[in-house]
Length: 253
Image (tube, rainbow, N blue to C red):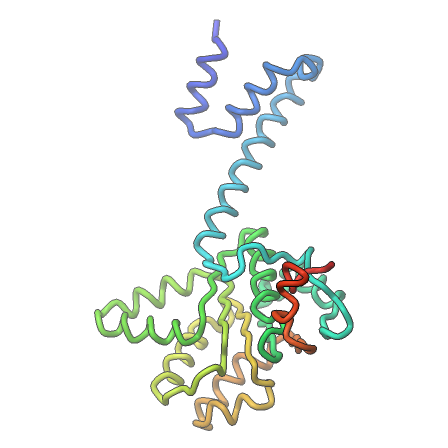
């Protein structure tokens, strides 16, 4: 006769941790004894599915390197002064824009919560199993210089392409050299029709062309980013001013 320990050992060998824990729970709780074989089997499979999903989300969250690990859409504060539209956020929360390879552009003054909203959208994407990566544009361009120097640029590009959602923070925070523009265009061009961007910037979109300066490259970059984008323009005073008084300044009271 097969014993419980043998079943548990088999589950461990097959790396079915969810099944193992659910089987132990079924044996410990008498209520499960009244369920049919099919119902108990479904409970085991559901436990395994949940365990694997939780592990996937944990792994994707670690890979994403989001700046704000505790930023979630459910906690956003929608006061009129912020110019944050709840219906727009709920629409974006479906992640349909990712399926359509569209982008999100978050603009606003320093401290209005652009990066926080971007990270909350990133967490929502991860919850649906979307590979996501967060990086500040200055750091991105520094990485480009390093991987070009050591000859691993193409490998680095392929790795970056694996992320379906790329969050680029701080666009426009520092001047870009012509070589930086070319690298940025190559990264953007590589992802057209295969991935989405969330971009945060202190600059209004209408000022991006002047910031990029080199007209041909600017036209190419804006054509690929802006025309397929959902725009969120945050307003109001810096929310960091209220951090000490309100705790997390980006979430609802």
